[in-house]
Length: 133
Image (cartoon, rainbow, N blue to C red; front, top):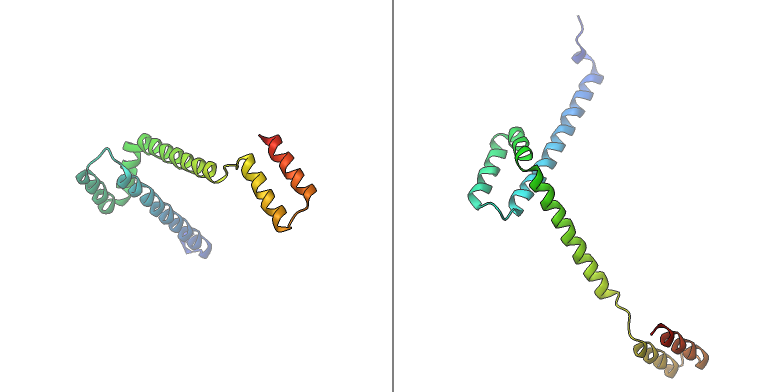
């Protein structure tokens, strides 16, 4: 009697399943350990216990942490994403701040004095800057 494991395709398929499960487990360990070390509500000894638990009993440790702390992980992730978004928005606002009309006219005057633009182009820059004010 030939068993299914004797077929090369099934061996390859089983190896792929094991490999992907291993990759998912490593990714979950990275997420959980980063969550453990980012937490402010638990002390160092509790963090050490979680780390040891996940190293000694890897699959059970990951599953228990996900079951016990799933809400906290989601809240901390949402808070971190919101903080990053606020920082990005603040940076964009600080970099993209528009200059005042007087600064635009001054830049246009410098270009006119250097000969880079004509008097008509300077008047257009001046009108545009004053209209934006």
